[in-house]
Image (cartoon, rainbow, N blue to C red; front, side, top):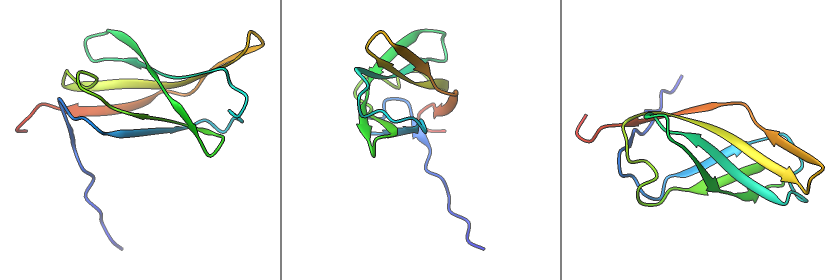
Length: 99
């Protein structure tokens, strides 16, 4: 058995790659986003790219992870006006600096 320590993500982190698997074929999706609820309740949308036809990928930039706490993430895709899909929630914990 091998235990691998998970890296903590801290406030202000830039370049964190977030990948959300959807188990849906996203090749013809016209909108691909990650919907985010920040710890203070603010809702934002991050424009995502498609990877391996079924996953959404986003790399954080400055001010994305600006508050410590739990960020609730949902994969979101649209196929014209025919279908809109919100994925299951995923929680990303962001730590205050120096903790």
